[in-house]
Length: 215
Image 1: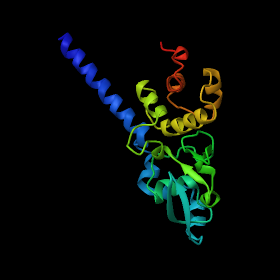
Image 2: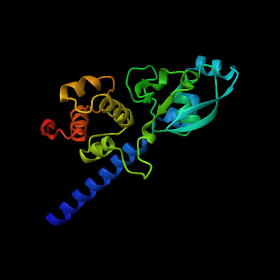
Image 3: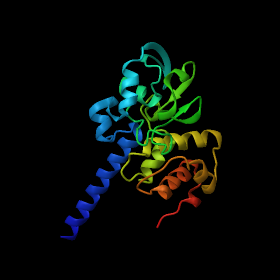
Image 4: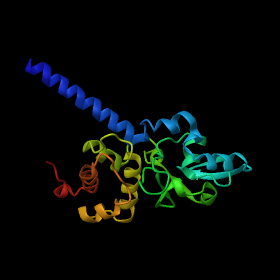
């Protein structure tokens, strides 16, 4: 009986690790139903009406090192373009008002809330999403791997934004203290409250395992 229980526990652990790896690699976790089912259905009626009457314009944007041509409405946000026109669904839409950080991307190496950034503003700039962090050989970015090793996420919805913010942090400060990391990540909210786990993952990515707190 004990062996059976141990086997079940190990199976659950492996299943959770696989779930986390998929979330961290490409943000593969279900979005809220309003966005998944309706695309623009998540917008307020006034916003939908305004966008429906706006003229489209074909522009080129550099996303994850690839120049993409896309029709963009004048008031269209980068989050909408990434998710519903380029299929990069790792960028999550949650608050849609630049408060939670689920939609965080890097633009020229600096984190931005894509839900409040107009797509027309990123022409001639380099956008990096969670999907663009993996190596050319498919290997996870060291930060992504650290998030997997620490089993950092809970539900996983905020994780892509957390990962992108952590990568941006370590690009400008490769060896932050735990407190510096905490302050840098303050713009990314986690409804599950997994903040310590995310900080542990960042410390692991820096090699500063002395600041990993478990328990």
